[in-house]
Length: 117
Length: 323
Image (tube, each protein chain N blue to C red):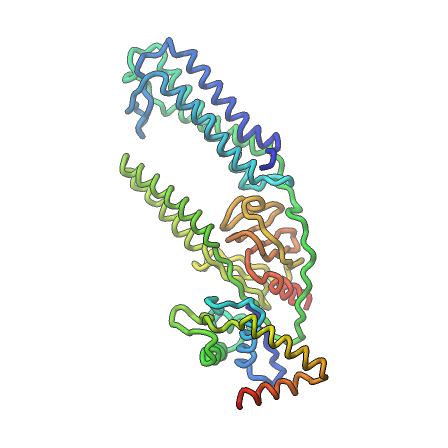
């Protein structure tokens, strides 16, 4: 499990932490049933406040990606992993967008639009 | 199965077997001088407490003198790799030599001292014999250790260097991994624990040696304590910590010479699972076979931990060490 933070990016730290976890889920290095590292350990290693890490874990829970249980920490839920079909569809989508010269910004905007529809 | 190198075969199999054979031959030659019933077992005080027919002792030594070296020899032949034995494997070979030497001397001398006596019950005490046996076995074991080849360095074939992970200046990065016994290692270790506990319970029930209860306790705590490890790579370097919190292993960034993803063969390279010394001054935290992170220090020592996603960990450590 790799956490990366760029303090200069302007993106809130807890968002960057949550994004790291989502990235690992997409890469397949984090799977259902895996435990996220204890918040205290992440906070110490990155020299940030433990509540920032907890905030990121809570956001992930609200998204349904992890379960937070006292004593067990944050556990990746069964529906957190992206299905191979979805990943394949995304792969095709990006390939098609590239072919048509559609940039990542435009494509992301279209995806957002689709979600709010 | 590989062919066991001659010097290891000598220590683990050939010399033990020869010693037992000499012991058995001597005892058979002495049979006419022995009483029909001899002492076959001595209590903790050194006085005889069990008796049997005179042929019991050569039979005992004959069976153990074949079974023990054969068992150690088989394990070693299956695990010793062409590069040479690990410290653990050398210890196994010496254990075979030690056990059979002690057994041969103790059994043979205990028969020798009963020649010409009327009945086994008047057999002399055994303790001096045991002392001689232990001393001789220790000396032979030490000779055997130095007779065997040194655990050579340059362990497994060097893997291709793991590329560093791109890390921007000022970026904060931490990698956290988990090393955990795989299911079948847990089954294996539970088996060993069960056998050891059963043996201890048996001895306690038979002889009431209660202090022995410490053995399964220590074994259990050390198994549980080293079953799960947290592995961390951050600005402080590499940290490997078990559930108990001790013993903790660290490699500071400044000490890192190289970090790579590698693949581990537990029995061949480290002689087993847990905290292990392997070929070429490598300390192993070995919980399963396969993918592992290997960190070489500047002084030539290395730490090997079996974790998933080792390439990311190695790449990050390389990048941080270069920063």
